[in-house]
Length: 299
Image 1: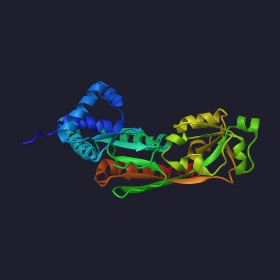
Image 2: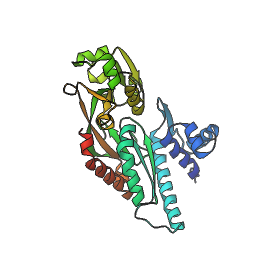
Image 3: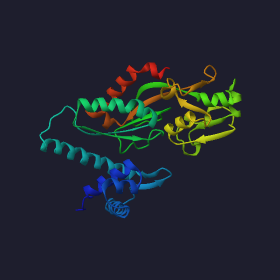
Image 4: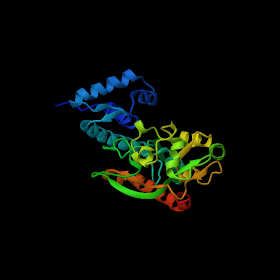
C-alpha cells in the first residue's frame, strides 16, 4: 500500500500557496529556504508530480498542488477544532479565516470590519493578505478574496459589496505651482501618479486604460498608499480612490465634472468556503461596514 504524504509537508505547501515565496515561508515557519525546497520536492515525489510552478508573482499551484492544498486545509481545520476542544474554549466563531484584499480598500474598510468581528468573537484568528489583482484561478490558500473590477469565474460565488470612484486629484501646492488642466487633454502637460503598469493585473486601475494622454512625467508605484503620498507631496496628478482622499484637505479635485471611473468591489469564495460560518460572518461584517459608510464611497 502506498505511503500517504506527510501532513507536515502538506501544511508547508499550504503556507507556500498563501505566501508565494519560499523565503517568506521559511521566515514564517522559522526554518530555511533550503528546508522548504527539500520538503516540497519530497512531497512532489510522494504525489508523483509537481505541486508548484513558477510565475512572475512567485509560486503558483498546479492542478495537483491545488488538490493537495485542499487536503492540507482539511488537516488544518481539523487541528484547529482539536485545539479548541483541548482548550475547552467555546465561541460561536473560532479558528482561522484568511482574506485577500486590495490594500487601500483593505485598510479603509476590510480591516475595521474584521476588527469588530474579532472583538465579538475573541477566538477568531484573522490573516489579511494585501494583493491588488484579479480573482485567483484556483483561490487556494485563502477563504475569501475581495477584488476590484470585473470577475470572470465559473467555479466560485461572487458577492457584490459596493461601488467606488477613481478620480483625479492633485495637492494644493502642486495646483498653485503648475496650475490644473481645464480639459482631459491638458492632463498630458502634467506629471501623473498611478500604478506600475507592467505589474498591474487590474487594468482599470492604471493610466493606460484611462484614455488620458501620455503624461509629461510619471510616478508609478505598486502601493496605493505610496501613490497617495506622492500626490500629497506634489509629484503630479493622481488617479486615486475617492474614499482615500475626498475629505482630505491635502488634495484638490482635478476635472471633477469631466473625468471619473466607477468600479465595483466583490467578495469571491469557493462553494466549500461559503459553507463556513466564519466566511459568512466576514461577508456580513463587510456588508455592514460598506452600508454604514456609503457616504464616503459616494463622495
